[in-house]
Amino acid sequence: MIDRRPLQKFTYGMYIVSAKDGDRMNGQLSNTVFQVASEPPIISVCVNRQNVTHGMIARSGRFSVSILDITAPMELISVFGFRHGGEYDKFNAVPYRMLVSGAPIVTLHTNGFVEARVMASVEAATHTVFLGEVVDSGVFNEEASMTYEHYRRVLKGFTPKSAPTFSPAHAWAKEPVAVSGPPSSQEA
Ligand SMILES: Cc1cc2nc3c(=O)[nH]c(=O)nc-3n(C[C@H](O)[C@H](O)[C@H](O)COP(=O)(O)O)c2cc1C
Image 1 (spheres, rainbow, N blue to C red):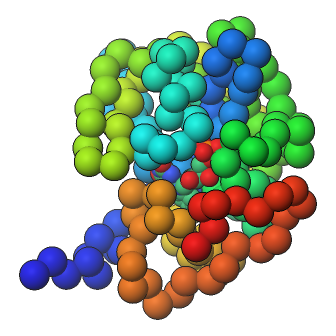
Image 2 (image 1 turned 60 degrees about the horizontal axis):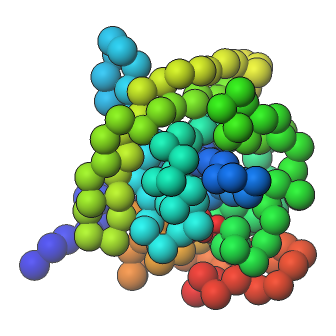
């Protein structure tokens, strides 16, 4: 029998992982971003294969990571964490900047960004782990980064089934706040 409680004690940050494919751009909330190697700098992201963002990263071979700061509101998290890019233009709702490669980064409630070129990927059941070599990066300000713990305990945030860290019996679960636009099929 697997006890999921220790998995809930892992620590994470809060990020918006984005990509551009042709003239379409999209992004998704992710807590599973981390640094893999230092020289050269390599990062990884873990993306559900059903997410719109997954196909965009796979096809374009690039992704960006916008690092959420502690001031990020539930409205912003809800747009990127509970909406499907196929039915909703997420970047219409937030200020953003395009990187040279074309991947967008969110510029409000974020303290920095990293852009990476996909160098390898690993299939892991429902998800793909993309490894990316860092090709561009920058810091916007010195605001503290938001943690997943802060999202769960302070903002009382909910984690959808599509996230790697979803737990079927999580005691703090709370519905996402309402955002404008059509309801997403992912809201559980
Ligand atoms: C706090 C939080 C963390 C999440 N972490 C991940 C993650 O690490 N990987 C993932 O694939 N989805 C994660 N998700 C779910 C995606 O953000 C969500 O499925 C999103 O709607 C996908 O958007 P897309 O279909 O437009 O790409 C997370 C959601 C939340 C709210």
